[in-house]
Image (cartoon, rainbow over all chains, first blue to last red):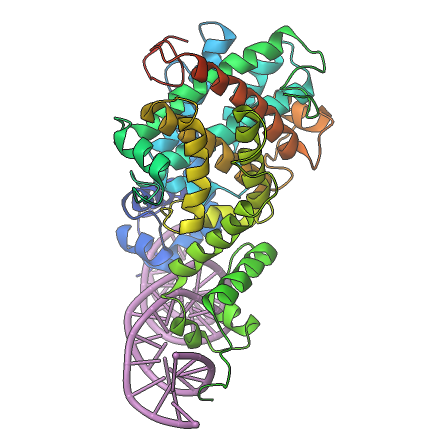
Length: 219
Length: 219
DNA sequence: ACCTGAACACCGTTCAAGT
DNA sequence: ACCTGAACACCGTTCAAGT
């Protein structure tokens, strides 16, 4: 009871423990978090404002890992190679805490580390001469694909519970595709290659016939 | 008290009310659901097994809308046009209940309506001669992009809370791109066009140098 | 069969009381 | 400043009791 000689808690070890719980159980609660930290639930409120701030802190920890990764832009190589590395490194980091992704979505990004991660991508694209509209469209497309892929990695190996007679095409593809545990990884890399091939088209042209700079073009 | 002449509840009106609550509040609880249905929380358990079953029922309602949509495959047009329609119709339906998407993710798809939605896409691709591996990879890529985009539509208009000095490139793109409320929609269509352009490459070739049929090719 | 109220084991958060 | 225990208004779910 009372105040200990040296603090038992800090925002960082609270968020780190929460991330561990999510990795193990898919979610966290304040009481479980407190038990893991050998502390009372109310103690946590002396270091963070509440559950939402803990969630933001978890994302910030992951983004810090991303920023510290080897090869994270800016760096060596063509800008296309750097976009591929940006996406791959961030997606790998998110997939390592795949169960946390659904907890993150919907909350606006406010922490400096995560904003810096996206700033690196935006700077990369703007540096290639893309106008602001093309930059935000490209960032949004990459972000959508990234989050979708990270959630795909979080979903169970059998994301679709098919029956051979009811869903023959889907069932056949799932079970005869020769892809088991690495379905999500293989698909991510395949889609990423296509995505960057498409971005390449932007850099060369800013005409309205460019599929990444407008919404009303024909296919 | 006691049993009413005609039942007050059914699995469908329970799930429909839950979807309304999610649309309005971003989430639902059993007590609030019961209050909206003018019923006691425990009554709900006579019609559904619990909260997870209600969530599955909500997704099923959306998928039923998708299956009933004009132009949902199979139908007119080239297969590329049909893939575009499949993705656009499904994404539109999800975006109408954008706040529900984070609630869906992570739960395996088991309801017939949603499985049928994906079966239509798989059949479309398999009918073009894609082998099972290419089909499941293509379905996964499209699904990842679709879910990511639907969540992007669910996120606040300002998904990134930037500051001009801290994140100049990202901030400039967001605020000078000329896209406000329709950022997510514009980005979705742009990415979709590129995605299908990429699928097009598969149909013509099944060589290992194809970016959508393998994981170990160079860019 | 279908609705109710009471009960159980949980939540997140607040706050006065300790050192 | 930092931890505690009690308290509050909630959850999801179960179950005996009613008609």
